Length: 417
Image (cartoon, rainbow, N blue to C red; front, side, top):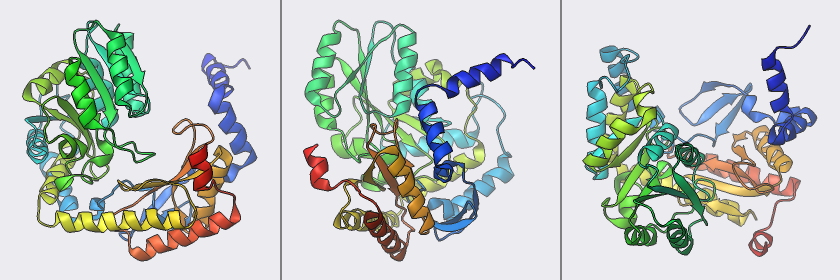
C-alpha cells in the first residue's frame, strides 16, 4: 500500500535535526521520556500521582499555591454558574463583563492606565509585538528573550519589519544595535523581566535610558515575576523604573495567579491600538468568564494585608532550596524568583537526573536544548509558597544522593568555562 503524503511528511520531519537526536535517545533509554507520564491525581500538599507513583511536585508554576485557595476556587465556581463555560464570541465583537472588570483590576493593581487580557502570554507576545510596528519601524530583542518573543519577531519580519537581536543584558550592545538600524521611525525593544532559566533580571534603567535616546520604547515580558516580585507582586518594571512612562509590560495569569491567560498593560492609547491591530486577540478565543472571576479574586489577594506573609513563605522556601543546593556542590541558577535550576550538563545526563529524582519521590523538570544551550541541561525546580520545609529538605537529600551517584559540574569549573 502506498503511503499518504502526510505519512511521508511526518517521516521526513522525524529524521531531521533535534527530532532525530531525541528519538534515538528515547529509543535507547525509553524510561527517560518523563513528559509522556500522566498526572493521575493531585493532593493539596503539593504531591501528585505521576505515572502511577506519588511524588512531591516541584514542577508546578503555581508559585503562590493559589490553585488550592478556596476563595479562588469559589470565584471560578461562581463564574461558571453565572456565565457558563464560555462567552461564545471573539473579543472583536464583544467582551463579557468579567473580562472588563478583570482588566480594570489588573491595571489598578499594576498602576498602569489600562490592561488587555489575552488567552496566554505566548499569544500576547506573538500578537502584540507585530501589532506595534510597521515597515517604517524596527523591532529588536535580547538574544535570550522568551521563545514567544522570538516568534513575534518572525511574524513582524515576515511583514517587512526589520528585526535584530542584541547580546544578552548588554546596554552597550543594545545601543550599538539601535544605531546600526538607523534610520527608522520608531523602535520597540523586547526583553524578559526575569529570564526563567538563569533567574537573571535585565538592567531596565539602562535600557530605558538608551531607548529614550534612540526613539525606542521598552516591551517587558514579566511573566515569571507576575505576583511574585515587587511590592504586591507587581513585577520588575515598577520596582526597577518606578513608572510605566515608556514601557509596555506583559504578565502571566497562570503562574503566580494560578488561573488562565496573559495580559499586556500600559497606556490607554497603546491598549486601544492593540485592540485594533493584534491578530491573536482579534481572531483568538478569549479567556472564559469563570477564570476571569478567579483572576479578580487573585488580584484582591495580592492587594490584601495577607500578601506579605504569603510572599515571605515563598521567599523563605526559595532561599532554603537555592542555598541548600549550593551547599551540596551544585551550580545554582536563579534564586530570585521561585525557579531554582541546578546545572547537570549533557542532554542524556540531565534526563537521567530527572528520572533519578522521580524514583526518589520528587518531580522536577529536566530542561535540555534548545530551551538551554547544548550541553548545559538543568534540573528546573519550581518552588511554591505551600511547599512544606520538610519537602524541601527531602528534595535536598535527593539532590545530595544524585551528586554522589553521578558527576555534576562543579561551580569552579563552570565559572572558568
